[in-house]
Image (cartoon, rainbow, N blue to C red; front, side, top):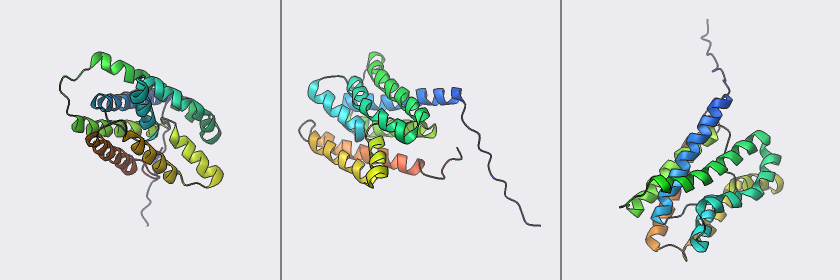
Length: 205
């Protein structure tokens, strides 16, 4: 008799599990952002644009990050539905809030900028995975890229790469060359973490 391989049972996340995951994920992302902010570093995507705005205008990262994401929720509703959009709105709001709160409780008297940039991207990448696992994101350019891919056939990866390239070029006028190199390596590490841990078939639910 042939061996029968049982298929894994899909068990959806409960509301409590989603809430806990969004809080934990955004705590990790915002802590990584705090490390990079204190180091004077940058990263890619919407967070990178928020970093640039905060450095140039002296505004807070949290305010810039929250404001940048506002136009993208309409696209999120159309492409991902209300559940995803609500989770993403909450995640963006919490990252904006936590990034303001962390410096009130944590201040590094001695912080190696290169180490802080790399480790900040590692922590941020893990936080992203937690959010993605529970059908949430941090919105922004990623939503726009997916919408343009569906609507006009523009490859999402190419648009994301183009935005990251523009952020890097703009940062030449904002950060030192050393921090630029560290930021590029950190962004590569972050994207590698996401690529290794978030892909079709990796999870059951």
